[in-house]
View 1 (cartoon, rainbow, N blue to C red):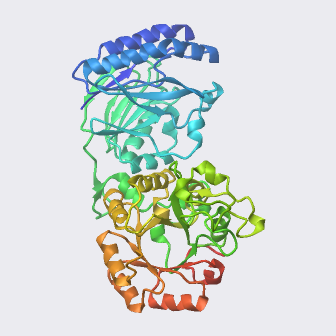
View 2: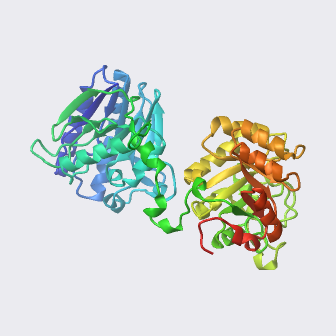
Length: 537
């Protein structure tokens, strides 16, 4: 792939805006058909300092359509991928946006700057999209996976680990960064490439041939080798890269080959250095057994599958909480055990036949205790927002019949939310349906799955065999369809054993002596002393 960097002159005088803009367009005209990827700097629609907020919006508005038309025309003429940054006006206001244009001259994606700078906030740009959790934006064009950083984004190193998780081939950087030296910018760019295991292709602007700051449009390989560094040169520069070529090194002395982020991810301890680190648990794979799982939360003291019940269990130190999911008729995942509404709410009918808005009108607290009158149903996303990283989640994927699978979107939507909140290592799905087990095995092998009992086949040994068949790490035995030998059979096959259920301390102790790893309980406090988790109660 032949990559072309465009680094135009950037003026400190607002009156030079149009002259600089015309020079940038001329550089696009010089692009040739042998180029495969063309990258332009941040705010290519206003390549000069803007003195006021009104001039900022006036000039971006005047140049926006001209710039995008020229970029699309260039992409089509050269049959190249073009990334150009400009102001995009959303319904809520302007957004610093990188437009992705394919070789047909079509806009196929938009990246909104993840970290709008304080100076941009003063311009009243819309930053609402950056106020909720989300995965880094990636886009695949012609088989190449791109990730993005824009200017201020380069300073948030913790985000590089997030980007690396998505395994991009190329990170596109559209920048100004007008106060950093060439040395600092090159260091940053090398750091990005090495820590994302991707090529870094960064385009900026020149403040003049003699300037020692800004500029530094560059191409850096995954091993941190600088292929191109334009420093303060005005114009264009090209280089050939193989975006699919990865840099592998020994994962520690004598270790097997791996990318740098793969090596570091193995030993990551985010609870040591993230904000609010002490509130985070280690990952599911690191918390010792035995464990007690609060079934439907601490359902003896608050309505089951509610935030109060789940929160009570977490506050008491439960290593695991269990809750059930159903999809609403409008596709929102909510937590409730029953298929019907009459037992736990003042409603009637089937939960999956109601919209979320209809369910939110119902009282899910009064039937438990009048003290909880008015309690509303909770969504899966609300649970993730409250408890990701605070406990392990045993997520029971409910279905109409153990032998009739739910739509694929049910699992897809569940996994999408898990990934959105980076909860993969803090949860597992409990599934009883064979089709759904196979679907998870093939499409989402990175998500841990527990094989539950089908209603017509509660045999512990067949459950273990089924778990092995579908690549599950756990089984959830159902009382009373198990014995001590069944626990051993599971462990001999490398399968973790959940037991549903026990509320009696002496019975639970016997189950642990048989080899139970995790016991589900409706009365967590009675069994809390058996919990092998890391929290102090």
